[in-house]
Image (cartoon, rainbow, N blue to C red; front, side, top):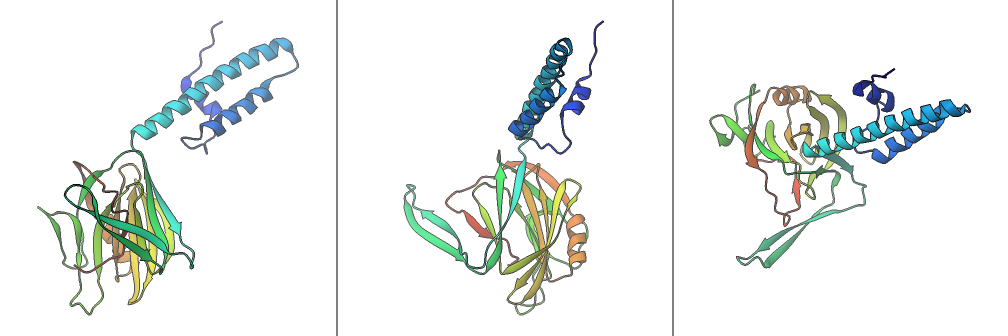
Length: 266
């Protein structure tokens, strides 16, 4: 009698729900242990169970390989939140070159008053995105046209006042680090739809600023909304943004490998 088996059922038998893409060796080891556990003393049963279990293991291994390849093909990105000890100085450099590509000047950048640096992992270059504010606590200005921006905000009433809010887009570029100057405290990490959401308070020299970060792991961009407004207002501002993906690929110059994510005037 022929035995019919559904591929999805095989996968359900073989995979632990906690297995993540890319953990091929760990998955294979789990499958090997399951195969050995199914072998009994009965020689006929041993041969049948071993043959069935090995077939299941082979299918599972192929599924892991295919799913991993699919994940890389989709260009998944990762955001790393690196916590910096008090006695560590974060260093980077900006390299200026002449018309022939020779190094003309090297500027070493050092950051001592920081405890949080963001970095990224990526399998491909992200594409640029633009945003359109859907709700604003007050008027603002930005770079862009037809209501779509990559930078937007309000500088406050004067240069002596605090910055209410600023919105800016950053991209997941391997080897590039974003420094959060001054001491910071992450107060919440959660998911919101397709985004990873991080809320933090930055203890700047002029007072505390709040930040809401929306990172898109499938498309490789992060939206930073920060300012002296309360966290709830900044979160509403972030979640009411309309986002559109462009066809332009992000280019990265490795000569400039560090930047600052703090809000700024201008």
